[in-house]
Amino acid sequence: MTVATDTSLTHFTRTAERAANQVISAYSTSFGLACRLLGSRHRQHVRNIYALVRVADELVDGVTAEAGLSYQEQCDALTHFIDETHRAVKLGYSSDLIIHAFAQTARAAGIDDSLIDPFFDSMRMDLGERTDLLERNAAPPAPLRFDADAHDGYVHGSAEVVGLMCLRVFMRDEKIDDGDAAALEHGASRLGAAFQNINFLRDLADDTTRLGRSYLGTADHLEDRDRMGWVSTIRAQLADANAVIPMLPRDARAAVRSALALFQALTDRIEQTTVDELYRSRVRVPDPVKAGLAARAVASTWMELHR
Image 1: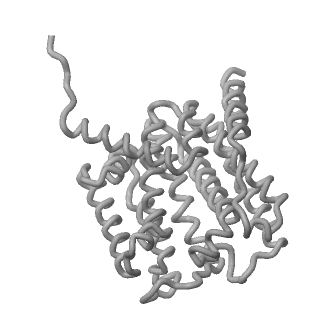
Image 2 (image 1 turned 30 degrees about the horizontal axis):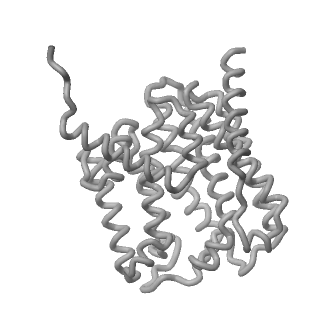
Image 3 (image 1 turned 180 degrees about the vertical axis):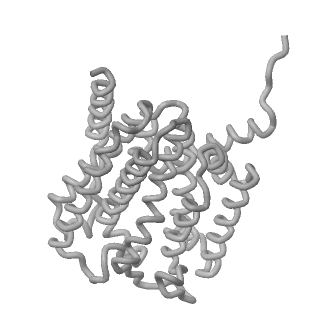
């Protein structure tokens, strides 16, 4: 009997996937918990997406600067990362393990330039490179303030398209009509936007003091009325996303419900936290509460499927 062995490429891809898993373990317990609730056919693909997004985000959020790269070298590093991602998606290979893992997912799920390019546009915005939305600077812009149009463009690229990438993973083997597809895409976009807007509020202290960025408007200091306005916006976005969860494949619903429930809990805590407190510390949900939310999401999905 002949025993099948992995090809070199298969072994390399599995190694790349393990590297992607290490990224999510190191940077997000919450997202890691939600991923564990996904069906096995989705789980690794979503981890691969998260790993690429996280590495790119770290590149523009201070890692390269702390490594001593000049502003131009930081921009060049991002350009290299972008070019290598496009090349890997086209060819199915990269020597960069995180990019290689993402490329396998992109090719399997049909994640194309319509989603990849907006994401990297937002990463360029973080470095002040987008000439159409932000004036290009020869040095890091400080502070970097986003008006309403820049905010919407940034959120689309940094978060909405990531939700759409995950949706393509979930729906890659499904046959649905155009109306359902549009509803799902709207829900995925709204969920991504909600996640990002919540993180803007959670990260006020770090964004303004360390990174010199204001994502929520041009004011030097966010006011409490602005906080409540964003809370209302986020709640509407989460409601839109929640409405389409029953349309997802069965093996994706519990994970999405769990992530949504966590961000609802974060929104509740932000609503109860003053702006001054948000500027001092990051709002968090304790791990036991996260576990409870995940358990309720699983139970709710089980009940839905067995009615």
